[in-house]
Image 1: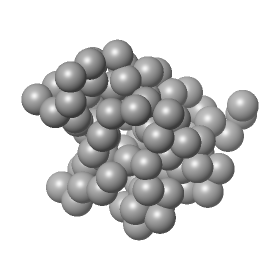
Image 2 (image 1 turned 180 degrees about the vertical axis):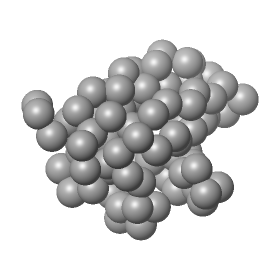
Image 3 (image 1 turned 60 degrees about the vertical axis):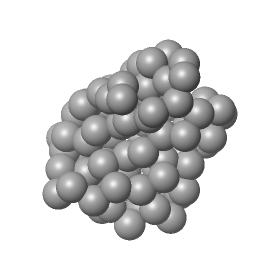
Length: 89
């Protein structure tokens, strides 16, 4: 199963606006993506409430994974998104 680990760059972590932008991008990926926090809790990446419930802070490592065909490109795009400070966009 393809997976990527990334450090969240947004200054407030995955809260409010950054979480919404991330969830929207995951939904547009058209493949199921699972977001797993450093504590090991996993949620559907398209669920804004699920993402918020993880309480992911700035600098925290998260893992994105998917077992769908063609997931590599979607995971790479989401990693690139999380590597940016989404509060500055």
